[in-house]
Length: 366
Picture 1 (cartoon, rainbow, N blue to C red):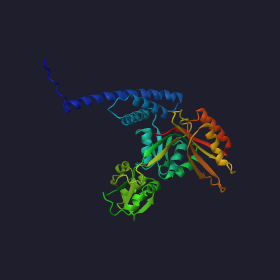
Picture 2: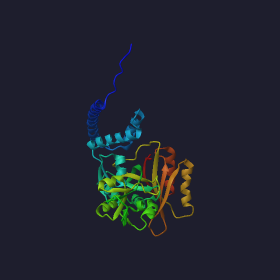
Picture 3: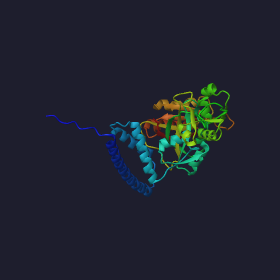
Picture 4: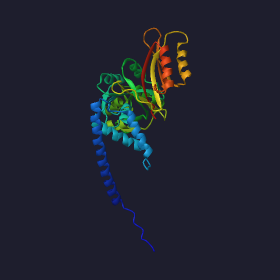
């Protein structure tokens, strides 16, 4: 007995299905938002923090584990981060200080961490980001701390020493510098304006293709893009987001000398805004220390770490500016102080130091 095969749905029918599913999704999202508002009321009464990055990570991990495709986990996590960001904005909008103007990589890092619903406060320098966060003008701040090519952002390290902010998270951002201009040509460019780190990260390309152009350091890449929008003889080095923001053409894509150029950003806040995150098994603890000026003092710092099996992933020195050739050391360690071996190592290390400050413990960025 033969059966007549059913015809596949046509495009119009599939669009009707999608419209129906979209309405269901919208209804469910609003139901979630109503529950989030109730959560916010409870948090207000209890005085507990509204933003919990560990909770965000738990939810996203659970969603990724339950995902059966065809959506990729990276796309699912991005969707859920935005959902949680929008719901959090109903509970209590999070004000986040970033390096401005709009279009910086710092802004991009903040959106990647907090979601697009965060209330961004644009600052002229990283100093201002620290000050705004320390003063409570913003609940959180995002600052650059290290680039895979150019090393540490020394000004950020200095500011950690002099402010009460601590680190509660980090973002590792793949940085692609594009040559931006008001006209779609590289002819007649007399000035390339960008943050000093961006100019350094693109120096080989600039030397080859724009050898006679002035390299003008400015406060941020987005500021360079803003100047490029005002003067056709100026080009900027910035993101595609900045190109859209200022109506510029991307004259050359990804001109950084290292194709895998990454910048590490720290998420900072006051300790009473958010306490030290709970252990995740993939944590970093950052310290600032100094030691008495005596032979072997720096070598002695390594002994507690080796004794208790704690790995050091970064060691930077900065002048103490006392005129006595003294230094502060910035150290990153693998692990969390709640782990016994890390706690023991830190206790012994503290006893060796003339100055000791824990900058924060936070999950390592993927």
